[in-house]
Image (cartoon, rainbow, N blue to C red; front, side):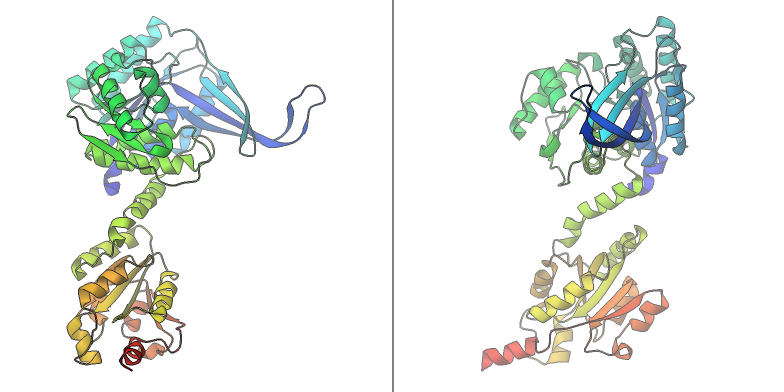
Length: 479
Protein backbone atom coordinates (compact mmCIF):
# COMPACT_ATOMS: atom_id res chain seq x y z
CA UNK A 1 0.00 0.00 0.00
CA UNK A 2 2.79 2.41 0.87
CA UNK A 3 4.24 1.97 -2.62
CA UNK A 4 0.91 3.11 -4.06
CA UNK A 5 0.41 6.25 -1.94
CA UNK A 6 1.81 8.53 -4.64
CA UNK A 7 -1.11 7.64 -6.91
CA UNK A 8 -3.85 8.96 -4.58
CA UNK A 9 -5.62 12.28 -5.16
CA UNK A 10 -7.10 14.07 -2.16
CA UNK A 11 -9.19 17.25 -2.04
CA UNK A 12 -8.92 19.02 1.33
CA UNK A 13 -11.60 21.64 1.98
CA UNK A 14 -11.91 23.63 5.18
CA UNK A 15 -10.44 26.14 7.59
CA UNK A 16 -6.98 27.02 6.32
CA UNK A 17 -4.71 28.44 9.02
CA UNK A 18 -1.22 29.67 9.78
CA UNK A 19 0.48 28.32 12.91
CA UNK A 20 3.19 30.69 14.10
CA UNK A 21 5.60 29.60 16.85
CA UNK A 22 7.62 32.24 18.71
CA UNK A 23 10.27 30.42 20.70
CA UNK A 24 12.80 31.48 23.29
CA UNK A 25 13.81 30.98 26.90
CA UNK A 26 12.45 32.25 30.21
CA UNK A 27 14.71 32.92 33.19
CA UNK A 28 12.90 35.63 35.11
CA UNK A 29 9.55 37.26 35.90
CA UNK A 30 8.80 40.75 34.62
CA UNK A 31 9.09 43.53 37.21
CA UNK A 32 6.15 45.23 35.47
CA UNK A 33 3.64 42.42 36.00
CA UNK A 34 3.64 38.80 37.28
CA UNK A 35 4.37 37.37 33.84
CA UNK A 36 7.43 35.55 32.44
CA UNK A 37 9.91 37.44 30.28
CA UNK A 38 10.74 35.55 27.07
CA UNK A 39 14.16 36.08 25.58
CA UNK A 40 13.28 35.87 21.89
CA UNK A 41 14.94 33.07 19.96
CA UNK A 42 13.19 32.20 16.72
CA UNK A 43 9.95 32.36 14.73
CA UNK A 44 8.65 29.32 12.87
CA UNK A 45 5.72 29.31 10.45
CA UNK A 46 3.88 26.09 9.60
CA UNK A 47 0.60 25.23 7.94
CA UNK A 48 -2.32 24.69 10.30
CA UNK A 49 -5.89 23.42 10.19
CA UNK A 50 -6.94 22.20 6.76
CA UNK A 51 -3.56 23.31 5.40
CA UNK A 52 -1.86 20.92 7.84
CA UNK A 53 -4.09 18.09 6.61
CA UNK A 54 -2.99 18.94 3.07
CA UNK A 55 0.69 19.07 4.07
CA UNK A 56 0.47 15.66 5.75
CA UNK A 57 -1.34 14.09 2.81
CA UNK A 58 1.28 15.46 0.41
CA UNK A 59 4.14 14.27 2.64
CA UNK A 60 2.63 10.78 2.50
CA UNK A 61 2.79 10.89 -1.28
CA UNK A 62 -0.67 12.01 -2.44
CA UNK A 63 -1.52 14.75 -4.93
CA UNK A 64 -3.52 17.32 -2.99
CA UNK A 65 -5.87 20.17 -3.83
CA UNK A 66 -6.38 22.66 -1.00
CA UNK A 67 -9.56 24.75 -0.83
CA UNK A 68 -10.31 27.40 1.77
CA UNK A 69 -10.24 31.14 2.47
CA UNK A 70 -7.14 33.25 2.89
CA UNK A 71 -6.93 36.99 3.36
CA UNK A 72 -5.13 39.53 1.20
CA UNK A 73 -2.38 39.76 3.82
CA UNK A 74 1.17 38.76 4.69
CA UNK A 75 -0.08 35.72 6.60
CA UNK A 76 -1.46 34.30 3.34
CA UNK A 77 1.98 34.78 1.80
CA UNK A 78 3.54 33.04 4.81
CA UNK A 79 1.14 30.12 4.33
CA UNK A 80 2.04 29.76 0.66
CA UNK A 81 5.72 29.87 1.60
CA UNK A 82 5.24 27.24 4.32
CA UNK A 83 3.53 24.95 1.79
CA UNK A 84 6.18 25.60 -0.83
CA UNK A 85 8.10 22.50 0.23
CA UNK A 86 5.13 20.39 -0.91
CA UNK A 87 4.92 20.79 -4.69
CA UNK A 88 2.18 18.13 -4.76
CA UNK A 89 -0.26 20.64 -3.19
CA UNK A 90 -2.26 22.72 -5.68
CA UNK A 91 -2.89 26.14 -4.11
CA UNK A 92 -4.73 27.49 -7.13
CA UNK A 93 -8.13 26.73 -5.60
CA UNK A 94 -7.70 28.96 -2.54
CA UNK A 95 -10.30 31.74 -2.34
CA UNK A 96 -9.00 35.20 -1.40
CA UNK A 97 -11.44 37.06 0.84
CA UNK A 98 -10.03 40.55 1.37
CA UNK A 99 -12.68 41.25 4.01
CA UNK A 100 -11.28 38.56 6.35
CA UNK A 101 -7.77 37.93 7.68
CA UNK A 102 -6.02 34.62 7.19
CA UNK A 103 -6.74 32.66 10.37
CA UNK A 104 -3.53 32.67 12.42
CA UNK A 105 -2.62 31.04 15.73
CA UNK A 106 0.50 32.41 17.38
CA UNK A 107 1.98 30.28 20.13
CA UNK A 108 4.66 31.70 22.43
CA UNK A 109 6.91 28.88 23.63
CA UNK A 110 9.65 28.53 26.21
CA UNK A 111 11.33 25.25 25.40
CA UNK A 112 8.46 22.76 25.11
CA UNK A 113 6.16 24.81 27.34
CA UNK A 114 3.45 26.96 25.73
CA UNK A 115 3.12 30.27 27.58
CA UNK A 116 0.25 31.85 25.65
CA UNK A 117 -1.64 31.51 22.38
CA UNK A 118 -2.85 34.49 20.35
CA UNK A 119 -5.57 33.94 17.72
CA UNK A 120 -6.29 36.25 14.81
CA UNK A 121 -9.54 35.58 12.93
CA UNK A 122 -12.76 37.22 11.81
CA UNK A 123 -15.83 36.43 13.93
CA UNK A 124 -18.23 37.07 11.06
CA UNK A 125 -19.37 34.68 8.35
CA UNK A 126 -17.96 35.02 4.81
CA UNK A 127 -19.99 37.01 2.34
CA UNK A 128 -22.26 35.38 -0.24
CA UNK A 129 -19.81 36.05 -3.07
CA UNK A 130 -16.90 34.44 -1.21
CA UNK A 131 -19.05 31.45 -0.26
CA UNK A 132 -20.17 30.93 -3.86
CA UNK A 133 -16.54 31.06 -4.99
CA UNK A 134 -15.59 28.47 -2.37
CA UNK A 135 -18.35 26.08 -3.45
CA UNK A 136 -17.31 26.45 -7.09
CA UNK A 137 -13.66 25.73 -6.22
CA UNK A 138 -14.70 22.76 -4.11
CA UNK A 139 -16.80 21.22 -6.87
CA UNK A 140 -13.96 21.55 -9.38
CA UNK A 141 -11.56 19.89 -6.96
CA UNK A 142 -13.97 17.05 -6.15
CA UNK A 143 -14.24 16.24 -9.86
CA UNK A 144 -10.58 15.15 -9.88
CA UNK A 145 -10.34 13.60 -6.41
CA UNK A 146 -10.33 10.04 -5.09
CA UNK A 147 -11.23 11.20 -1.56
CA UNK A 148 -12.61 14.45 -0.12
CA UNK A 149 -11.69 15.73 3.35
CA UNK A 150 -13.86 18.36 5.05
CA UNK A 151 -11.63 19.85 7.77
CA UNK A 152 -14.03 21.74 10.02
CA UNK A 153 -12.45 23.99 12.65
CA UNK A 154 -15.63 26.06 13.09
CA UNK A 155 -13.98 29.18 11.66
CA UNK A 156 -16.79 29.90 9.20
CA UNK A 157 -15.65 28.08 6.08
CA UNK A 158 -17.84 24.97 6.26
CA UNK A 159 -21.25 26.55 6.69
CA UNK A 160 -24.41 24.46 6.33
CA UNK A 161 -24.85 25.48 2.71
CA UNK A 162 -21.21 24.75 1.84
CA UNK A 163 -21.24 21.34 3.54
CA UNK A 164 -24.52 20.36 1.87
CA UNK A 165 -23.34 21.43 -1.58
CA UNK A 166 -19.95 19.71 -1.36
CA UNK A 167 -21.25 16.41 0.06
CA UNK A 168 -23.95 16.33 -2.63
CA UNK A 169 -21.30 16.86 -5.31
CA UNK A 170 -19.14 14.09 -3.88
CA UNK A 171 -22.09 11.71 -3.74
CA UNK A 172 -22.94 12.54 -7.34
CA UNK A 173 -19.41 11.59 -8.41
CA UNK A 174 -19.09 8.58 -6.09
CA UNK A 175 -16.22 10.11 -4.08
CA UNK A 176 -16.00 9.21 -0.38
CA UNK A 177 -16.09 12.09 2.12
CA UNK A 178 -14.17 12.19 5.43
CA UNK A 179 -15.25 14.85 7.93
CA UNK A 180 -13.14 16.09 10.83
CA UNK A 181 -15.98 17.66 12.85
CA UNK A 182 -16.31 20.67 15.12
CA UNK A 183 -20.10 20.85 15.50
CA UNK A 184 -22.29 20.16 18.49
CA UNK A 185 -24.15 17.52 16.49
CA UNK A 186 -23.36 15.80 13.21
CA UNK A 187 -26.66 16.12 11.32
CA UNK A 188 -25.17 18.71 8.96
CA UNK A 189 -22.72 16.07 7.68
CA UNK A 190 -25.48 13.77 6.39
CA UNK A 191 -24.22 11.93 3.34
CA UNK A 192 -20.58 11.86 4.46
CA UNK A 193 -18.81 8.51 4.41
CA UNK A 194 -17.09 8.77 7.78
CA UNK A 195 -16.71 11.31 10.59
CA UNK A 196 -13.60 11.34 12.82
CA UNK A 197 -14.38 12.98 16.19
CA UNK A 198 -12.05 12.93 19.16
CA UNK A 199 -13.39 12.03 22.61
CA UNK A 200 -14.44 15.58 23.49
CA UNK A 201 -16.19 16.10 20.16
CA UNK A 202 -17.98 12.76 20.44
CA UNK A 203 -19.21 13.57 23.96
CA UNK A 204 -20.44 17.02 22.90
CA UNK A 205 -22.32 15.51 19.96
CA UNK A 206 -23.92 12.62 21.83
CA UNK A 207 -23.70 13.33 25.57
CA UNK A 208 -22.27 9.82 25.99
CA UNK A 209 -18.95 8.91 27.58
CA UNK A 210 -16.39 6.65 25.90
CA UNK A 211 -14.22 5.61 28.84
CA UNK A 212 -14.59 1.92 27.98
CA UNK A 213 -14.68 0.17 24.62
CA UNK A 214 -18.36 -0.65 25.06
CA UNK A 215 -19.17 2.97 25.88
CA UNK A 216 -17.21 4.13 22.83
CA UNK A 217 -19.23 1.80 20.62
CA UNK A 218 -22.54 3.11 21.99
CA UNK A 219 -21.47 6.73 21.57
CA UNK A 220 -20.16 6.12 18.07
CA UNK A 221 -23.39 4.36 17.09
CA UNK A 222 -25.38 7.38 18.30
CA UNK A 223 -23.12 9.71 16.31
CA UNK A 224 -23.51 7.51 13.25
CA UNK A 225 -27.29 7.70 13.49
CA UNK A 226 -27.06 11.49 13.37
CA UNK A 227 -25.59 11.62 9.86
CA UNK A 228 -25.93 8.08 8.47
CA UNK A 229 -22.27 7.13 8.04
CA UNK A 230 -19.36 5.38 9.76
CA UNK A 231 -17.57 6.83 12.79
CA UNK A 232 -13.89 6.69 13.73
CA UNK A 233 -13.32 7.89 17.30
CA UNK A 234 -9.78 8.97 18.20
CA UNK A 235 -9.45 8.18 21.91
CA UNK A 236 -5.93 9.40 22.78
CA UNK A 237 -4.16 6.81 24.95
CA UNK A 238 -7.08 4.38 24.44
CA UNK A 239 -6.40 4.19 20.70
CA UNK A 240 -9.16 4.33 18.10
CA UNK A 241 -12.59 2.79 17.70
CA UNK A 242 -14.16 2.31 14.28
CA UNK A 243 -17.93 1.80 14.24
CA UNK A 244 -19.57 1.00 10.91
CA UNK A 245 -23.18 1.24 9.81
CA UNK A 246 -23.31 -2.53 9.34
CA UNK A 247 -22.66 -2.88 13.09
CA UNK A 248 -19.07 -4.09 12.82
CA UNK A 249 -16.57 -2.65 15.29
CA UNK A 250 -12.77 -2.42 15.21
CA UNK A 251 -10.67 -1.31 18.19
CA UNK A 252 -7.08 -0.29 17.47
CA UNK A 253 -4.73 0.08 20.44
CA UNK A 254 -2.65 3.23 20.73
CA UNK A 255 1.05 2.86 20.09
CA UNK A 256 3.27 3.48 23.11
CA UNK A 257 5.03 6.78 22.44
CA UNK A 258 6.32 9.64 24.56
CA UNK A 259 3.77 12.40 23.95
CA UNK A 260 5.25 15.86 23.45
CA UNK A 261 2.34 17.68 21.80
CA UNK A 262 -1.09 16.68 20.46
CA UNK A 263 -1.37 19.81 18.28
CA UNK A 264 -2.37 18.76 14.78
CA UNK A 265 -2.52 15.04 15.59
CA UNK A 266 -6.13 14.92 14.41
CA UNK A 267 -5.05 16.47 11.10
CA UNK A 268 -2.48 13.71 10.68
CA UNK A 269 -5.09 11.01 11.36
CA UNK A 270 -7.45 12.43 8.76
CA UNK A 271 -4.66 12.86 6.19
CA UNK A 272 -3.35 9.32 6.58
CA UNK A 273 -6.87 7.89 6.50
CA UNK A 274 -7.64 9.85 3.33
CA UNK A 275 -4.45 8.86 1.52
CA UNK A 276 -4.92 5.17 2.33
CA UNK A 277 -8.55 5.23 1.17
CA UNK A 278 -7.54 7.14 -1.96
CA UNK A 279 -5.43 4.21 -3.17
CA UNK A 280 -8.24 1.74 -2.54
CA UNK A 281 -7.31 0.33 0.85
CA UNK A 282 -10.14 -1.12 2.99
CA UNK A 283 -11.34 1.17 5.75
CA UNK A 284 -10.10 -1.08 8.56
CA UNK A 285 -6.58 -1.21 7.08
CA UNK A 286 -6.66 2.55 6.52
CA UNK A 287 -7.48 3.07 10.21
CA UNK A 288 -4.37 1.09 11.22
CA UNK A 289 -2.31 3.35 8.94
CA UNK A 290 -3.86 6.45 10.51
CA UNK A 291 -3.18 5.13 14.01
CA UNK A 292 0.52 4.66 13.22
CA UNK A 293 0.71 8.17 11.77
CA UNK A 294 -0.93 9.66 14.87
CA UNK A 295 1.66 8.04 17.14
CA UNK A 296 4.41 9.76 15.16
CA UNK A 297 2.62 13.13 15.20
CA UNK A 298 2.21 13.31 18.98
CA UNK A 299 5.90 12.54 19.49
CA UNK A 300 6.78 15.82 17.74
CA UNK A 301 6.62 19.32 19.18
CA UNK A 302 3.96 21.59 17.72
CA UNK A 303 2.00 21.23 14.51
CA UNK A 304 4.12 18.81 12.49
CA UNK A 305 4.08 16.79 9.29
CA UNK A 306 4.50 13.01 9.24
CA UNK A 307 6.53 11.90 6.25
CA UNK A 308 6.07 8.82 4.15
CA UNK A 309 9.47 7.52 5.31
CA UNK A 310 8.43 7.89 8.96
CA UNK A 311 5.13 6.13 8.36
CA UNK A 312 6.87 3.36 6.43
CA UNK A 313 9.24 2.77 9.34
CA UNK A 314 6.38 2.82 11.86
CA UNK A 315 4.29 0.32 9.92
CA UNK A 316 7.37 -1.82 9.42
CA UNK A 317 7.88 -1.86 13.20
CA UNK A 318 4.20 -2.63 13.72
CA UNK A 319 4.42 -5.58 11.36
CA UNK A 320 7.46 -6.79 13.32
CA UNK A 321 5.13 -8.61 15.71
CA UNK A 322 3.70 -10.63 12.83
CA UNK A 323 7.12 -11.32 11.33
CA UNK A 324 8.60 -12.10 14.75
CA UNK A 325 5.96 -14.38 16.33
CA UNK A 326 8.56 -17.07 15.92
CA UNK A 327 7.95 -16.90 12.22
CA UNK A 328 9.27 -20.03 10.56
CA UNK A 329 8.81 -19.47 6.84
CA UNK A 330 9.79 -21.20 3.62
CA UNK A 331 12.97 -19.94 1.98
CA UNK A 332 11.08 -18.46 -0.96
CA UNK A 333 8.86 -16.42 1.36
CA UNK A 334 11.82 -15.41 3.51
CA UNK A 335 13.62 -14.05 0.45
CA UNK A 336 10.63 -11.83 -0.36
CA UNK A 337 10.42 -10.57 3.23
CA UNK A 338 14.14 -9.81 3.35
CA UNK A 339 13.97 -7.98 0.02
CA UNK A 340 11.11 -5.84 1.37
CA UNK A 341 13.06 -4.99 4.51
CA UNK A 342 16.11 -4.04 2.49
CA UNK A 343 14.02 -1.91 0.13
CA UNK A 344 12.92 0.08 3.19
CA UNK A 345 16.50 0.64 4.30
CA UNK A 346 16.87 -2.11 6.91
CA UNK A 347 20.18 -3.96 7.26
CA UNK A 348 19.52 -7.70 7.35
CA UNK A 349 21.80 -10.01 9.37
CA UNK A 350 22.06 -13.78 8.94
CA UNK A 351 23.52 -16.42 11.23
CA UNK A 352 22.99 -20.15 11.39
CA UNK A 353 23.42 -23.29 13.46
CA UNK A 354 21.75 -26.40 14.83
CA UNK A 355 20.70 -24.68 18.07
CA UNK A 356 19.57 -27.98 19.58
CA UNK A 357 19.50 -27.19 23.30
CA UNK A 358 19.54 -23.41 23.56
CA UNK A 359 22.23 -22.25 26.02
CA UNK A 360 24.00 -18.99 27.00
CA UNK A 361 26.56 -19.43 24.23
CA UNK A 362 23.77 -19.47 21.66
CA UNK A 363 22.13 -16.42 23.24
CA UNK A 364 25.42 -14.51 23.17
CA UNK A 365 25.81 -15.24 19.45
CA UNK A 366 22.20 -14.24 18.66
CA UNK A 367 22.48 -10.99 20.61
CA UNK A 368 25.80 -10.14 18.98
CA UNK A 369 24.32 -10.82 15.55
CA UNK A 370 21.26 -8.66 16.24
CA UNK A 371 23.48 -5.70 17.15
CA UNK A 372 25.00 -5.75 13.67
CA UNK A 373 21.84 -4.67 11.85
CA UNK A 374 18.11 -3.98 11.94
CA UNK A 375 16.70 -7.45 11.21
CA UNK A 376 18.02 -10.89 12.14
CA UNK A 377 17.32 -14.07 10.19
CA UNK A 378 18.42 -17.37 11.73
CA UNK A 379 19.06 -20.42 9.58
CA UNK A 380 18.41 -23.76 11.31
CA UNK A 381 19.73 -27.13 10.17
CA UNK A 382 16.88 -29.58 9.53
CA UNK A 383 16.72 -32.79 11.55
CA UNK A 384 18.29 -34.77 8.69
CA UNK A 385 21.09 -32.25 8.37
CA UNK A 386 21.79 -32.35 12.12
CA UNK A 387 21.96 -36.16 12.07
CA UNK A 388 24.55 -36.08 9.31
CA UNK A 389 26.62 -33.55 11.26
CA UNK A 390 26.13 -34.75 14.85
CA UNK A 391 25.21 -38.44 14.61
CA UNK A 392 22.03 -40.54 14.84
CA UNK A 393 21.21 -39.53 18.44
CA UNK A 394 20.81 -35.88 17.52
CA UNK A 395 18.93 -33.60 17.45
CA UNK A 396 17.38 -33.83 20.89
CA UNK A 397 14.57 -31.52 19.74
CA UNK A 398 12.97 -31.75 16.31
CA UNK A 399 13.25 -28.89 13.84
CA UNK A 400 9.80 -27.49 14.58
CA UNK A 401 10.54 -27.29 18.31
CA UNK A 402 13.95 -25.71 17.69
CA UNK A 403 12.43 -23.17 15.31
CA UNK A 404 9.72 -22.27 17.81
CA UNK A 405 12.21 -21.71 20.62
CA UNK A 406 14.54 -19.70 18.38
CA UNK A 407 11.72 -17.58 17.00
CA UNK A 408 10.54 -16.71 20.49
CA UNK A 409 13.75 -14.77 21.15
CA UNK A 410 13.20 -11.03 21.03
CA UNK A 411 16.23 -10.47 18.79
CA UNK A 412 15.10 -12.90 16.08
CA UNK A 413 12.89 -11.65 13.27
CA UNK A 414 12.69 -14.68 11.01
CA UNK A 415 13.65 -18.37 11.01
CA UNK A 416 14.36 -20.56 7.98
CA UNK A 417 15.30 -24.24 7.71
CA UNK A 418 17.99 -25.62 5.42
CA UNK A 419 18.58 -29.29 4.70
CA UNK A 420 22.02 -29.03 3.16
CA UNK A 421 25.21 -29.55 5.15
CA UNK A 422 26.00 -25.83 4.75
CA UNK A 423 23.74 -22.74 4.52
CA UNK A 424 25.28 -21.51 1.24
CA UNK A 425 22.10 -21.90 -0.83
CA UNK A 426 20.10 -20.13 1.87
CA UNK A 427 22.59 -17.26 2.03
CA UNK A 428 22.53 -16.92 -1.76
CA UNK A 429 18.72 -16.78 -1.75
CA UNK A 430 18.47 -14.22 1.06
CA UNK A 431 21.44 -11.99 0.13
CA UNK A 432 21.92 -10.65 3.69
CA UNK A 433 23.86 -7.47 4.38
CA UNK A 434 25.79 -9.01 7.28
CA UNK A 435 26.87 -12.60 7.93
CA UNK A 436 27.70 -13.50 11.55
CA UNK A 437 29.54 -16.57 12.86
CA UNK A 438 31.32 -17.34 16.11
CA UNK A 439 34.93 -16.25 16.57
CA UNK A 440 35.94 -19.92 16.79
CA UNK A 441 35.85 -19.82 12.98
CA UNK A 442 38.47 -18.23 10.72
CA UNK A 443 37.23 -15.97 7.97
CA UNK A 444 38.26 -18.44 5.26
CA UNK A 445 36.22 -21.15 7.01
CA UNK A 446 32.89 -19.29 6.98
CA UNK A 447 30.59 -20.63 4.28
CA UNK A 448 28.98 -17.83 2.27
CA UNK A 449 31.38 -15.10 3.38
CA UNK A 450 32.77 -14.56 -0.12
CA UNK A 451 29.24 -14.33 -1.56
CA UNK A 452 28.08 -11.77 1.02
CA UNK A 453 31.17 -9.60 0.59
CA UNK A 454 30.89 -9.78 -3.20
CA UNK A 455 27.41 -8.26 -2.88
CA UNK A 456 28.62 -5.36 -0.73
CA UNK A 457 28.00 -7.01 2.63
CA UNK A 458 30.35 -7.90 5.45
CA UNK A 459 31.36 -10.76 7.72
CA UNK A 460 31.41 -10.45 11.51
CA UNK A 461 33.10 -13.01 13.78
CA UNK A 462 31.36 -12.63 17.14
CA UNK A 463 32.95 -13.46 20.46
CA UNK A 464 31.58 -16.63 22.02
CA UNK A 465 31.34 -17.94 25.57
CA UNK A 466 34.01 -20.65 26.03
CA UNK A 467 32.94 -24.09 27.20
CA UNK A 468 29.30 -23.76 26.26
CA UNK A 469 27.90 -26.37 23.89
CA UNK A 470 24.94 -28.68 23.48
CA UNK A 471 27.27 -31.68 23.32
CA UNK A 472 28.73 -30.74 26.72
CA UNK A 473 25.22 -30.43 28.19
CA UNK A 474 24.26 -33.86 26.83
CA UNK A 475 27.44 -35.43 28.22
CA UNK A 476 26.84 -33.86 31.62
CA UNK A 477 23.25 -35.10 31.69
CA UNK A 478 24.29 -38.65 30.82
CA UNK A 479 26.97 -38.71 33.46
